[in-house]
Length: 312
Image (cartoon, rainbow, N blue to C red; front, side, top):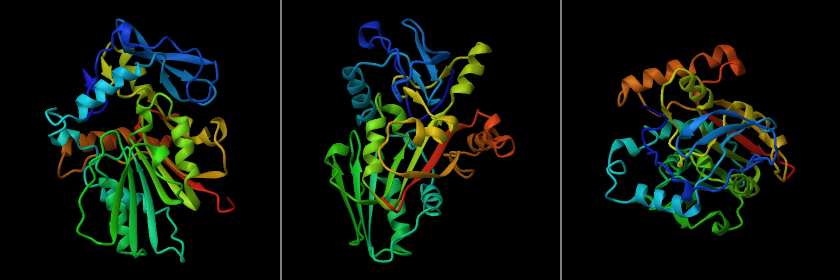
């Protein structure tokens, strides 16, 4: 079996632990959805693509109690994956921090940068962002970390402060300069309210970064070839690639004025020095997109940066 993410585990969900099949798209509410392939057999769970917003979602979601058990086991100290490098989703997070900051414009009057990190584990990525900002344009950095089981990093730098929030509703009113949702939206049965909340908390000119899986076409191909491809259901219940993100600001019920300033295949998670074979494969898989654009869909992951309009 091919696994879409080495740092997550799939879990077979029984009939009694599944919600009834949802007729409309859980992202935009449209009724026009077409099947891509099965993500689980017996009981069958199918990945469906929406004809309006182009997001792909499972036709049946696990019940909340199932997800609670799934993530409690995943974050447990005795979980062998938690305590290995396989649980690290991104080698050298400073690479991604630098990539995000290429699109960030600091406010001359703002010397304290505020970062909202949703689903960021211990805040490794937001810490890398803060450190780069402190070395360039900021006098202080405040991070609000929101995760299922957040245990924040420790810092000896008095200019860097991190606080933990139980959920996005309790992070405060903002505004934030940068909001991050790296590898989290695909886990949420209803991610649009969380997306709206994060965008609303940005200051005018602030940026939002998201990274999501884009494996639907890989799943379709492997299914036709009789190869099992595990998208790690029920951990991943959505697949959100280029077609979804390029139209998200128009197709989703979002409030406010925003513009998409980056929409490309996601950063390769591994590096040549730590995981050479996997890194080569990932680069080869993403490379055709830079030549073929939207015609090529098997990139494996997608990332976007959205800016809040300065008139807001």
